[in-house]
Length: 526
Image 1 (cartoon, rainbow, N blue to C red):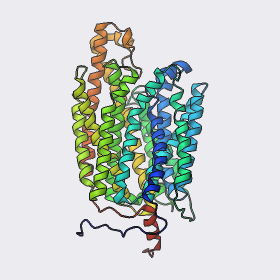
Image 2: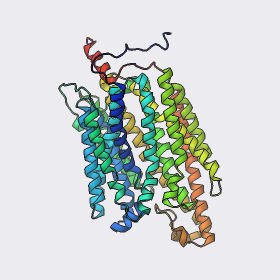
Image 3: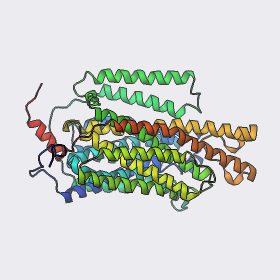
């Protein structure tokens, strides 16, 4: 074996190592929990009009049913990641699932929109913990050299949960004896199953040490991120992008984050250890993860709207039409993970994934209302293939580059920025879409455009429109959607640039827990 490819650790030994069977058993609980956590963010997409009608909600509530859950999930990810470096990972992941169950039950039984919004915050906190802790627990159990074999499965679960959510929600809403409440309740039995499986199968040692949580830093990070996400979700339809509210919220959010950085640089146990960004790999994978978030979330949200509005498909059919992207992501993440485990090389798959993602975005920027479905599906499959090769392997590269005691922080940082990229991307691109649709329809229809629903977040009632106006509405949404992918292509290209500058490093051959024990036995160099 040559020096360039030799493993950098000795093989893992001792009674503490989990067997392959034990790892697979524990992964079953993690996969179930992660799927329902991701599903919570997407399953309501096609149910929102029915929910708003039944609960007598307003257009503002329409937006916030999605935004509150995403805000809570994104803002709390760093705190979950830090606690994973200090407390029992098993206990934390079960706590996050318990919070998700409570939030889901309240949401499914909600009597009004106010209670629903509170329940979505609780759901989001639980989902944030599950999303961050799943990969942290994996890194604690499995050596990086073998992680690709399992990370591909998790990449597929993440993609399926993100993309299949609208399909599942559409089926539930269209099924008379179920209804929209089951969009929330469906996750409860699976979450309970995940808690039971983890209790029976997950066995990780708990390192006892004195702990201090940086609550001030956590509060500043949460407040700063929440302010920016609230701004990105409201700008463009509640107030203008260039307005006093924009200046106030952006400057306020940035000021809070600057204060958070100052606090994090001084406390002994920071929520986000700033020194991990000294690693070029961590810094570049963080940037790339944020950009991938824009491509994944933005692409799936607006393609679903294109299917329903431009092509006139039902919510269920629109969900089925997302399958090519799901399959592309599933195949590429699984195959890439297996090849990384076999050969120990990973950068080529990041570069290939980013390149394919750029091509997929460019091809999707050419779609219109008359694009043949086989061609459309092939473009979607390409985007899925690219994202599948990138998403979990970026986490793998970062985890492989940091000390074992910072695995939780590094993983949560990548998850945090990917979620934030998705949230800001969806909000900003949604505003662009609404403004572009309004402009296109006003050009064709003049003041009558407002009667068709143009420029709002509601899908127009296509069945109520006469044929000439129907065609104008369909063309407007198709043109606006294609232009969003044209905007997204340079963002995907920046992810490719970031990946190109990542330096490949041989993968560790021992798990995070074993590395932590090795590092703890070494004398301090300070």
